Image 1 (cartoon, rainbow, N blue to C red):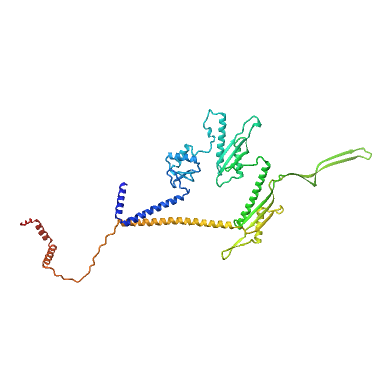
Image 2 (spheres, rainbow, N blue to C red):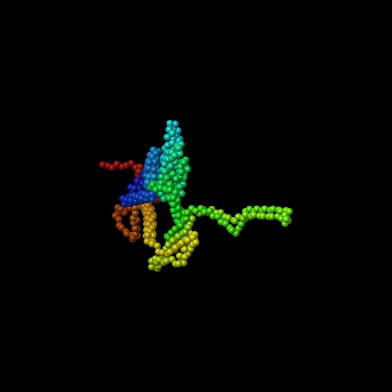
Length: 524
């Protein structure tokens, strides 16, 4: 292999020496432009990677062979992780503002096992692993503290397993045991939640977290669980000590939910008919929050039932007027009675008030201008009927509805649309420019490679020098009179040539004899 490279370098050197100065300059410029284009292409593709980060770290590189090791790691844990990777001479890359770390694909599982041996990344809090090691010298107070820490750590891990929760801190006050009921204090818990970006906890989820924690600790009532978010805003029930305020809060929440549900239903219906943003709906629901219990007794005078009947017969014999029998009957009747116990449902719908504002239509004229037109009475009547059926309109209940056609102020919407169109055009232009640059670089590379190949072929196969072929022009024979000595020599040469052709052996023998003759010394 080494001999091959030596021969290759020697051939390239010989080719380079054969090139002219102009060819050397052209080839050098083409090679430099080619490497510059490749470098620019690599930089551009790296800056538009999947993470948008240039990355950093020991041996960092933008490559598809890099795999995610850990994501959303705290800074203190990240420092320990990178230190361990440096000890193991593993290549890694930091992304997402230093919260995500990538390693080479071949080192992924090795890195995970090495970091697991060191307990990295550290799990938040400690759980029941505190009791993995038996401490015989621990006091009763220390054991209680360990139990409290373990419970807090386990609950923290459980709450953080919810997909909406990014992090949580839980503090528990264990119940104080006492033989006197007056001195016995209840258990309490405080929870701080950090919700993930774009997520939101519903009321049911907050109550679920409170019940989850309360059922994990003996003697902890859900009302004694306080939950706040990262900004300190109270998420759990703020009116747990005031029954009236609690009931009012639930009533307001129920009314808002009913109104929101009906409003979404109507807006979705009208959005599919008129178009998004073409109708504005407001619904006010009057709910009955009175809790009434009635006992009703109804009697039917037309119906009667025999409840009891009594008969008495007396026989008289040997009487002056003869024998006779006295009969007496007594019947007790009961009137039909119906007893009802009625408990009215809390939050029953008492009345609905619906207001619907419908935007008119815009007609584009021949000159390109948009002309506004009001909705026709027939269209408004159809919308009125559709909305009534959607919300369960009841005239006997006192429901009211108003459907009005009016022009909406679409200035901001028009400006937003124009801005969106400009942004879209800018994005398209940027994409076209990027692909244009790539195509231009590709064409330049092709031209440079072809020029380089052509120059090398010309250097390896230099052109042959042009040979001038004299033009043979037939001219008339010109007789030239030669001198006698030259003519005599020419005649002898012709004779020798004829003899050589006719009798080559004799000529060869004569020449051989000449060569064998002894040289004749010249007299001085």
